Length: 399
Ligand SMILES: *[C@@H]1O[C@H](CO)[C@@H](O)[C@H](O)[C@H]1NC(C)=O
Ligand SMILES: *[C@@H]1O[C@H](CO)[C@@H](O)[C@H](O)[C@H]1NC(C)=O
Ligand SMILES: *[C@@H]1O[C@H](CO)[C@@H](O)[C@H](O)[C@H]1NC(C)=O
Ligand SMILES: *[C@@H]1O[C@H](CO)[C@@H](O)[C@H](O)[C@H]1NC(C)=O
Ligand SMILES: *[C@@H]1O[C@H](CO)[C@@H](O)[C@H](O)[C@H]1NC(C)=O
Ligand SMILES: *[C@@H]1O[C@H](CO)[C@@H](O)[C@H](O)[C@H]1NC(C)=O
Ligand SMILES: *[C@@H]1O[C@H](CO)[C@@H](O)[C@H](O)[C@H]1NC(C)=O
Ligand SMILES: *[C@@H]1O[C@H](CO)[C@@H](O)[C@H](O)[C@H]1NC(C)=O
Image (cartoon, rainbow, N blue to C red; front, side, top):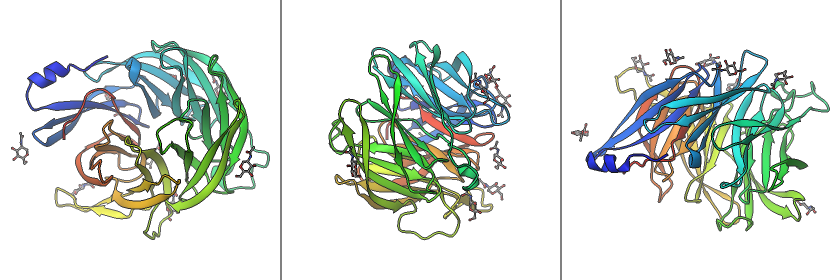
């Protein structure tokens, strides 16, 4: 699927890109962000309710023009996984909806880009990882299911009463999937059979007790898969990034982690309210790590109508070092409360933030060279709790 770039060029100065937003209220909303001579407009274009009652995560399959949506199923026994074709105008056509184990909150596509592929889902409430074969056209079928239990539940805080799988992360070589488990203080490790895409569980990384691993990201300073590799893990309950060096063990033997440092996600600032970091990404140029901070509400933004100031949570940027260290660079308002998730545009020049409790998406400008995030260029209200916002990988914004 290609954007009509010729038409955009002919129409003059305007450039446009689509984004997709999931909300617990039920819709997946398509947004159009357009730029005309340095002015930006962000507007909803389509609504699609076919994902189910509580959309929690969106996975774009850029090569095939598909969107996968997970419905957390907050008030039912089960969640669901659904697939859509992405149309040129940003609308979505539902292909398939499949009931799955309760509480899916994240999905990652793995396998051979030109061949067999699958998607791995993390089930928070259902304490499981499941995998689904993809046929390339949006159809999918069940492959594996890994249910987890805690040996000593009930002796720990309420969010650690059971295993809570929170994210599925593909390593830079494409040979492993790692899954932070907030309830069990583990990162579960799976090797991938490159032919069958069958996962085999390996020895888990044990995170510190009570830390609550939520999301993580690999960092490969050379950009060469298999070269020196680090893993930066955001721990929700202790508000830190744990930085590990990663060693590959031979013959799909697993991954070995050595803890290098623990960095508070609020950087150099003190805070009073309990902070709960959520998303963590590495910038497209492989130079910066960005993490979102929820609940600490460090900022107060001016209200354009002259009314009461707008409270805001934050994004922290760190400069990634070749030795695995993180150097604090900036803390900056996310444009609303509870930035559960955020995505960088393909160029790294914009950050789209899903502020869950403000019910908005904010688009922030970002200077790629310095890594500094800047003023919001646009903000749009979205009904309900915003859970995820992703950029359609096609289309470009100038500026
Ligand atoms: C979802 O979108 C439809 C329009 O297709 C609208 O009628 C409905 O109110 C929306 N729901 C929410 C929660 O925004
Ligand atoms: C962009 O916005 C500025 C300031 O509001 C305005 O003066 C200018 O005319 C706008 N340009 C276009 C092309 O709309
Ligand atoms: C998809 O499946 C889920 C779970 O079974 C269900 O709640 C939802 O309504 C379904 N969506 C549609 C559009 O049928
Ligand atoms: C729905 O949820 C129940 C209870 O967690 C589970 O036993 C069942 O396998 C789920 N159904 C599907 C299709 O995953
Ligand atoms: C894994 O790393 C630890 C240090 O973090 C080391 O003690 C251990 O020997 C390593 N295990 C393997 C199998 O390499
Ligand atoms: C948010 O902060 C308040 C006050 O510190 C605390 O009571 C609450 O548990 C925090 N919520 C989360 C999700 O961390
Ligand atoms: C801005 O102020 C107005 C008037 O006080 C208020 O209604 C509105 O909610 C404020 N905007 C935000 C985003 O809080
Ligand atoms: C959505 O957000 C509101 C606060 O804005 C909160 O009270 C409510 O519980 C949330 N609903 C869900 C389903 O998360």
